[in-house]
Image (tube, rainbow, N blue to C red; front, side):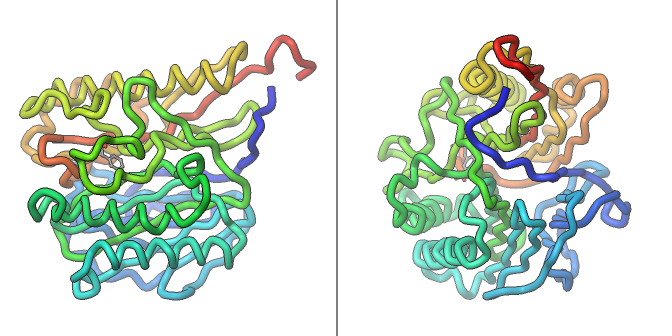
Length: 338
Ligand code: 3EB
């Protein structure tokens, strides 16, 4: 079967050791840890989160040749199908966090247009002290409002939102990295969850602008880029204080998202999903041992790479968040000729 969207990046995400030479051309390398030196290669990103396992680095690799450079303060790399971009904004430029975020996202939008990759696919946001500030002055809410004000400049922006992650770091400043496409991906929502862009007022003056997942790829080789997913059902946080129950609720959310994706976008196809890479953000690293059996089961017999990081989730009562990439293997639908 073929899908009504085409973004078939020869793109892989690999979790590995920093020095481990992964085969392929490098689009981006994200290193997680505290006190790491500032990168010099524009494709390298450093994020101030404690790495809890032995795989502290995420590589985005491509089979196609990659060009890279620096533009308007962004490190960038492109392969003709996708653009990887990244930027670090120091705390001194975040005094008015909402305005700074709005300006940053406007610059990102301009960059996508300038480079000819107008479609957001996936955004990662790492913000220091994400839960600091009360009520609507919480830093996450200010960030969220600024992001919304920038993205809402586009008509129908809620129909083309990217999958995203927003996590609190232990080091100052804001790190954003992203993937954008020449062709659009397909945003996917989760039937168990109110769309984040429709969250009610109680979570802030502007709702968070992201999709639950982005479907990319075509036909038989599709991938689902799953947003940071937490123990949120409807719009409410569940199981405050209980990390194991929060993980189970999170896994139920991911399962529902996968089932919904297959039912909606691969009807009648013999489609199955398998995880390719996983990332867990955990507020309190002391809780990791409690979760290990569940995580091993999630990784499956192949023991899919799982990157475990210490980070703050954007609501006080959420203890953990999981993001993932799933491959979707679909046999040609019986009603078509291949
Ligand atoms: C949630 O479901 C959890 O603001 O970009 C997850 C993923 C969350 C991304 C974001 C927030 C974001 O609302 C929080």
